[in-house]
Structure formats: C-alpha cells, structure tokens
Length: 271
View 1 (cartoon, rainbow, N blue to C red):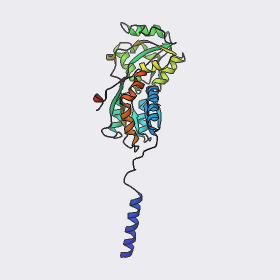
View 2: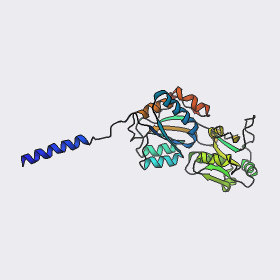
View 3: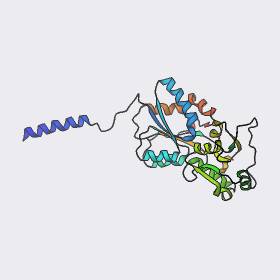
View 4: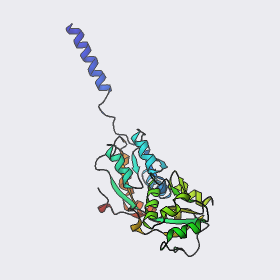
C-alpha cells in the first residue's frame, strides 16, 4: 500500500510539472490587434514602422468596435484592443477582459458630413449646420440615403445620431438613414455614389479622395470622440506592451497626425 501511494505521488508531481498554472509569456509571435475600422490607414502605417524598427510582426483585424468587443468577450484570441469610443472599452473592462493598468486614451477625432466627388482646392465646409439643418439635409439628400454606421452600436453611428439630435435634424432625416456595419462601410456607400451624403470621421474623409467634406460637426454636438487602447487580459505576448507603448509615443505620432487624428499626450492618456 505504501509503495502504491509513493508511485501515485510521483506520478502526480510529474503531471503538475507538465501543466503549469498559467501559460508562459510569448515573445516573437505576431501581436494580434483588434482595432476600430476608422484606424486602418493610420494604424497600418504606425505598425509598419514599428515592425521595420523592431523586426516584430503584427496581425490586425478591423471592424466596428462593438463587433470586436463582442468577439473578445466570446474568447477570440487577441493581444490589443483599440476602440473608437469609451463605452465599448468600458464593456470589455467591466467583463474583466482588460489587463489592469494597461488602458490609455490614445487618439481624438472629429465628425464630418461628406458627399461623393473628389476634394476641391477649397477645403472649408460648404454648408451651415444651423439654422434648420434638417431641412438643409433633406434638400441635399434629394430622396436619397444618409449613410451612417449602425446608430445604436457602432461609435461613429452613435456620435452621428447624437450630433443630428443636438442640431434638431434627427427627426427630419431618420427615415432616410442607411446603416452600415462600420464607418468605413458607410464611407464606401458615399464613395461609390450609392448614398448622396454620409456621416463619418474626419480621418475617413481624408483617407478617401473620392469624397469631399461639406461640413464639420461642432465638437459640442456629440460626446468627445476618444480612442482608448488596452492590452487584453489573456494576452501572453510580451511584445504587446512594447507595441502599445510605441503607439502612444512620438515615433507613431506622425502616422496618426498625417491621417488627421489628434494624439493625446502620454502624460494625459492614463486612466
């Protein structure tokens, strides 16, 4: 009996040695990033510079922040989450899926009204947002659709609806809204001429030469457009923290600013 117990004890220790309490940290593998669709151009440029500098690699999935947050909640493997608003980062954080102390506020953006057609030399807004903005929009739409990201879930759509409500135009045009899965899909509807108007971020409009800006919504017409970023709790990639630090630093600033983002200083970015 004693011999049997000893044998079982040795076997148990062997099993424990093969099964560590938590997965070891990984380095050298691609850093997996879930990022808001509106970040594509700027984040592609910033991560390309980081990869060239460090020899590391990344894999980025772009979609609406709501879709990405739900995927993280469902257990999709990722290292970094960059959201286009605070609420979806809050959602992930409340679920206990953000690594404590890693969340920062990274970028700012603006909201614009766009129409199909190339940019002209005059880049100033061409229409006034008041008074009677709803009537102005109706005339410009001419029976067509107003392209927006999903108004009750995607950040750009929520910001857009809030701005239209603030300016007294929502009730007038809500029946003409064409909702898209994310802001880049809304941009594409306008770029293709499938919608005569759209509401997107200023950075989206700047990234597509086949649309032009008619007006910029006042900053006080919608909640502040802030992009938070954080390391996902289950990430075991030690390069994730290094990349997040790079994105908030001076080296990545030019990539974001060239696309029209406002970069939040690191001293004010912590939460």
